[in-house]
Length: 476
Image (cartoon, rainbow, N blue to C red; front, side, top):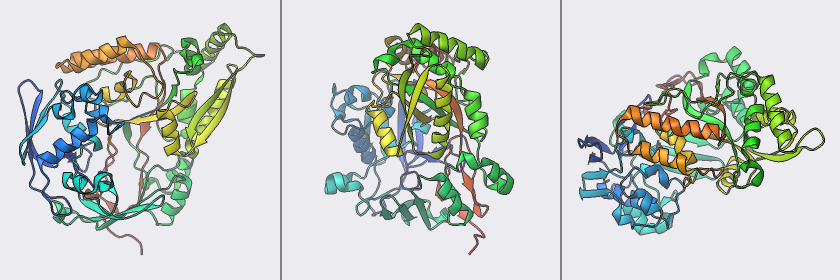
């Protein structure tokens, strides 16, 4: 998507926001009104990109009829949440186009992170002219048009997407790679074989089980750096057993973060005792689970005591199903978790399905406990903490706490960044005290890159758009 489309802001080679579809912008003194000046550029079919394309796209995103699961990402825009709830029409959205080259965006509250948010796909423009012409078929490959560095050349479902350079891209003169192919490769081990055979220039993710071989034989290809992401386990609050805080606490106590990070994955991730990764902007990041300093043996004893208090023990085990994807690394971790939970009278069945199906069952709350991960859409703690809002579509476990929601609402209305961070940390501490989720480890980027790929700069956002890359000296 980042190769095809360009939001008002886009990514530089280090993943930082720079002017994209907007060549410049201005901010009002109260921080709540942004005026964007649209760059002179065109869709790949030659039609000019206008401010109305953004108005049309954002209204469509937030219209309840669209049922976009990511609509909440744009609730920072004035009236957006009310529109999502059906309380206001899409026309009430705080975005307007005085002319083709000017977009005025009014916010519910100041948001210093807005340029980062505008790089996200939810904020991309939509070619209004093709939607009006083709209806719901506007995004099929034969009809799709783009305003980014590339356009769709070929799409073979479940195999690959071929993108070709967009000659109408405003900066096409500096785009060096003519064609890029993305391969759908669920088997990271199989992909590594192709990578070693020079069939692939880059791979993400590489199999964690092969980190030893990679370090020994291809260390220069590893581009792992700290990432704004976290791996976690979520319990389904809609199922009675997990409404008991003692059960959630027992699971969190029994999960051995150090063993998973250091002995199973061995890539370099840090064990997580909270949900906000290091490096998030304007956030104190001192909240943590209260047992962080407790030795693991003592955690197991406490977890067993909690299970016995709920009526479980050596003669009466609790049964649960752990939902995860077919990713080999996740399945290896699941087998270890199964043994960890067995220590506290829990018999765990592992249910692994393809990632798309796994995400769907989490959205539908069809699980006992499930493995999940979150990668920041923008560099702000709210992007993680919003996952626990009562109304969030990606609140997989169905956690609901009015006090938590109120803290997040207050934080979002607070202009002072230090006070805002403090309020969000209070919300995180509250969620951790209730074991609303089970943080596992903080992610690293999982890229391997061939030495002939030039311009690849590992970064905390994990953005490496093809427009900034080149190929020099690839073997024939």
